[in-house]
Image 1: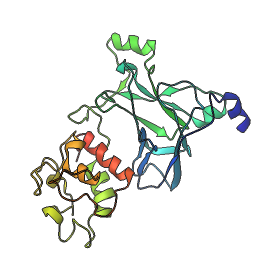
Image 2: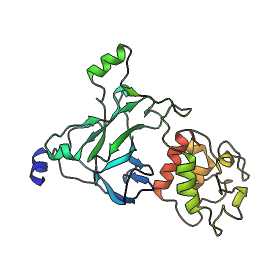
Image 3: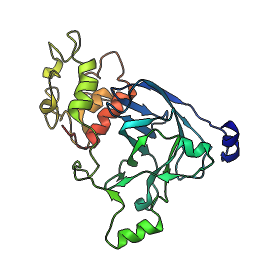
Length: 280
């Protein structure tokens, strides 16, 4: 296998700083060091813990954006959400996330395959492209030629190469998160509700995060400064996200959690949930 890789590799060897995370059956988020590639693994996707890493690489065919090598490469029981952030190509209709399968790479079949596309997956304002993958591929990168001529012709004749996305948030971004599963269960129940923490038995700012606190957050003004705690589609304007990102306004109270920093993967999940319109 090493010999085959040497023959088909394009460009220089891997470079840049890797990021790593251990993720198990409960799910989690893996993000590159530069925050450009995010992989969301939903609960049930993995059967056991895996130590994942993302490393910027040049050992691939040409792509529009920076390629990233991800390891290990495993099949998933639940499709992962793949998100790439950066400068988008001028023709947004051709913006796609490309992947290279590890088995194909080992066999010398080194070419980008565009992941399934869906309506609303390209967010020009946020500079992101969203897609799904039923495995963790060896490489991911942003493409500017993901819509071939056949697909273009089909689109012009009235058919589409996009997936059905009847469930979308108000911004048109396909919904992949859930407050109950991803925010309440994976973040608040773990880090905010113990008796010695801020929003359990004696809730700080009048905000209890026990049970399901969705109705106390979304479009609800804070008791601190009247700013909405969560504005669907607008994480940067939401006091909850500002406090978790440790950038609250002067009248917005202390950053949360106090004296610590929310893990980057948890913060990214909160941001994704708000960007997707705060599905319950």
